[in-house]
Image (cartoon, rainbow, N blue to C red):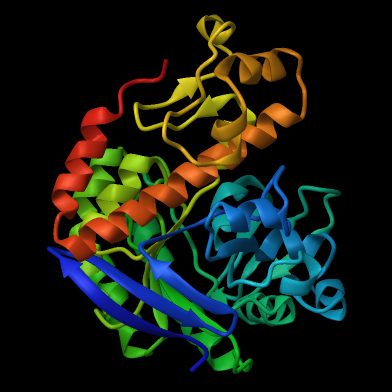
Length: 369
């Protein structure tokens, strides 16, 4: 098997473990910075590694369009191509079926896109999604699924579940790369019966790991938090559990409390590019004029390069002057914040005090200032 999972400790439903991959171990709970197009935007691989990232995420749809999965393969695979020698997970393009709904035609055979770059056609079938990811050479590849909208009608969500199960079966049958693991994706919206039904079918196929998809797609965060414990409980205890595309720091802690092991989200870097920083006291908006003369670091006690070397006043200046360094420094800090949050969660689980850790974080996080 390309990967294995060791569970070291539990605290309630929260879990601390290790995912073992061909490119190294991933301590869980883990946050995966998103490198959609072979790069975590604005950051070098060394910056991301030094921040403490054990694993990155890449995107099948975007890399297939540009530069092309065969080019990545011929240039040594995604690890060599982007100079990242630690584990990589690639999503399947299923989220683009949701996010680019206006440019996608979905049938049981697959999804037909128009490229967001030049309008050229791209057909993404389960088999093609497998082939692209095998060319990319990621350690963990996701099956192709259909992600329904949060407000989808019951028949729309059921059709997506049925299609996702059939597509997962086709992905598993077509997959042939022994050094790459394949994770299945549970869909079902907020319908817990559908989620349980989908999970039962996928667990019977015996994938090396399982993901919960279709969350943080428009539903209220409270509704997601309420659904997560039952959804996670449907997944095998001895295999990694991954919550896709989530989310805010409080959402990650809700996921950990529910028994989730792996997370990814563009929020740290996207917000960093837009002058919003995550801190232990809550979000900070660096464009706010009150930071103009502030000599303090962004976050006291943070060991990241940004906080160790620059003041809030300087960061405010960089964004006011539209200098590239501002988004880079805030993206680096935000990635570090998320990674440190997960490290703190791991330590708390091992010490049997995760509930206290979570409550303390939530009490400190105040509205953006």
